[in-house]
Structures are given as C-alpha cells and as structure tokens.
Length: 128
Image (spheres, rainbow, N blue to C red):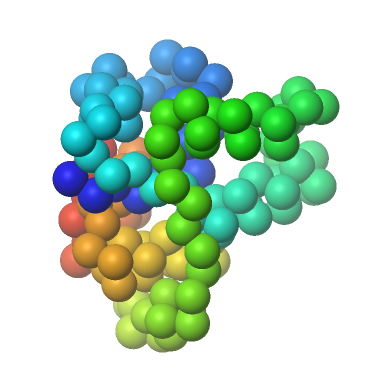
C-alpha cells in the first residue's frame, strides 16, 4: 500500500502520541508499505512553529530527519502537477496545506492517512 501521511499523523507518529490509532501506527511501520511525507507537511510545521501554533523541541529538524530515515519514510517533493491538481478540487476545505496533500494523494494514487473529517468530502482514498 502507498501511504501519504497528513502532518498531524506524522507528528503523532514521531512523538509516540496516544491519539495515533494502533492500526495506523502498524501500517506506517509495515515495511511492505511505501510511506511518504510531503514537503507540504514540513512547510506546514515550519509555518505553525513560526506563528506559535505548534511547539516542538529545539532539535526538531534533527528529530524529523532521523525519524524519516529510521522508518523508511520517503520525502515527497511538491511538483507542478500537484499544485495544478488543487485547481480541480472542490472547496470543501480551505486549508492550503491540506488541499495540497489531497492533490498529491490523488495525483500519485496514495492513500491519505489522516484523521481530518473534512477529507472524507473529497474523492480521495483515505486511511483513517
């Protein structure tokens, strides 16, 4: 299975957060799956840190890099096709980061791993 992690799922995973369902954690850790984390998610983390909506340890960048490597999570670049796909999306959701993740999941045929209930309004394959 090809899985794209929503930002909150990635953060919950690397922090061992109890809100991440065990079944989802198992899918992320399953080496038979291809798991990716988008540059859009990293950008969202940076924005939220800069405006005070998110608090992480000072060495958060090192932690993110090591968790990506340790867990074979692949970095997904943002491509023109991904951005263009957002034009076709209905406006069920206004968050630009989430819209880009949905577009990436559709363009790359990934299951989007998220617990955001608004994602179900889109014709995207969800893992929740």
